[in-house]
Length: 161
Image 1 (tube, rainbow, N blue to C red):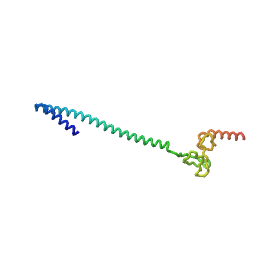
Image 2 (spheres, helix red, strand yellow; image 1 turned 90 degrees about the vertical axis):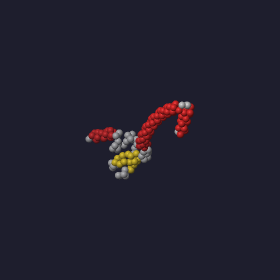
Image 3 (cartoon, rainbow, N blue to C red; image 1 turned 135 degrees about the vertical axis):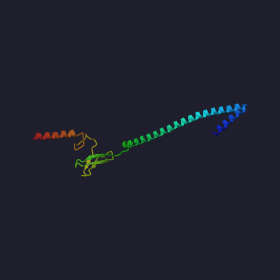
Image 4 (spheres, rainbow, N blue to C red; image 1 turned 30 degrees about the horizontal axis):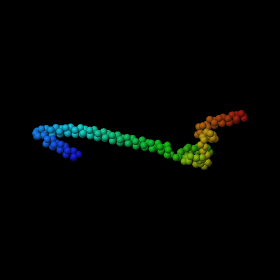
């Protein structure tokens, strides 16, 4: 930048030296200074506009980074909920003592569990309705079959009378 000032002064000096009348040299020097100030004004406006735009962009980038951070945090929570949970809680009602308890099943092939109340072993059937023994209280699929079985038993008793 210092070099630019030196070059400007050298150009003005050359103009002065090439004009023989001092009044004309002074007018030319003033006009060159006016033109230079106009260009400096334009450069200042461009610089200010570009600084303003850069500040707007930087602020927008900060906002977007904050939004990305929030979305990333939410996504991490969702993936943790979906993929990182290895164990599952199941509510069980003991068919022997009707004690209701929650079991944390950590293995895929969990076949049986011991009732914490009566200490009987409860076999877990993962095939739901296919092998239902009609002893479960919470099974929705065998409710109709239990009713049908109960109706048949009542009909048999009524026929015997």
